Image 1 (cartoon, one colour):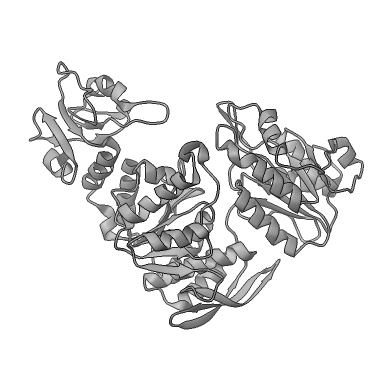
Image 2 (cartoon, one colour; image 1 turned 90 degrees about the vertical axis):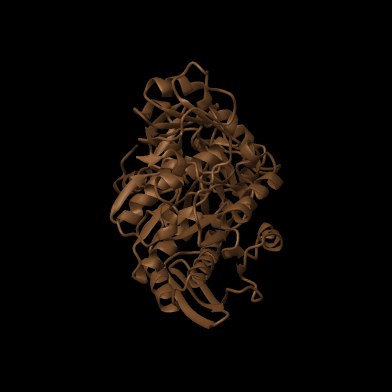
Length: 506
């Protein structure tokens, strides 16, 4: 229970019609969950508008309704509270309802196109090494105090976020690391939180079905630092041109990281191998050596970001070193699923042109045979990235196998056609039969069935080859139409490797 007057503190209210002297038994944005004496916030979503469900909310017992337009008939027995922005109001109401839990923890927000998940895993490991009790909210899952929950969104809706933060505080969590998506910023899910530091990884083409242009995409990311982080430290990637621009435009004190020695945190004497990374990390106080089982230049960048962030909140370099060394793998992020005497088979979440290029560039450094890449693009999502991913895969792979990702309601072959548009003149398309029969020339093929594509890639690889299965990473499902089917690239790859060892068929 919470007093309405307390809940409305900080909310930009335009009009109140009715009695606000009472208490709300609960706070909801889903009309189906409303209960007797509750407060319902009508927010607009991608598919539905909560204002259309106000009568249902009241019927189920809502006594108070928050909306940002005239939508509550006077005949309904509920107090109408009209606000300037329902989404912002929901974030503040949720913060107030759950007692502003982020004030009681150290909260770290990580935003950017690529690297968010790996950085949150690194920071979790570093903070754990420092003796902290850590909660994580991100793409893979939500977790704290030994409890793990599936992640419905990278960043939860504001009400769900505040509820989980309250549960974390009550469970003794001291530090929370969370991925902050551009959608979450634009939809104001994080506006009720008090962050101690914000991290900007990079920006590349992604989500342009939602943001329309890179300029719009950048401005949304910038709002996180202008509106939410404000005077708190910002850890920014100086190697990324959008990071440089962010550095020049925000008011926060900035800590830069990157490969150039002019940044606040940078590497020295770096050695990258298939077995991991060894380097020295330079910072304003000196330098310290690190060793990580993670692989590749892009993961060294993630380590720099995590080290800079940890130092900005007072974590010592010995704990940083220990945490970096302890993190052996990040689920679905260049995760090796094959054994020593088999072709090197990796599963990675790379689903943008920039991410795919980074992963393939890393694998090229260790190449002894061929690189075989299996990838596709999601349906009902940013279609502008499809040709770019095709171009990168064709250029950096010896064999690219274009397949389905999560086609959703789009025709898989139409998505594949968009990808092929970027493959380029001079790239040879082979049939799957030609590939099976031992074709060795550089080129690509198309297999819409993702399972069949993975099996083909593994079956034709020899011991010196590298197979990259990109796009879905940790995901354990595939969405075809509106149905979500069980599907895990790692399990399919292991099945294909087993068949390879035993001579079985799929």
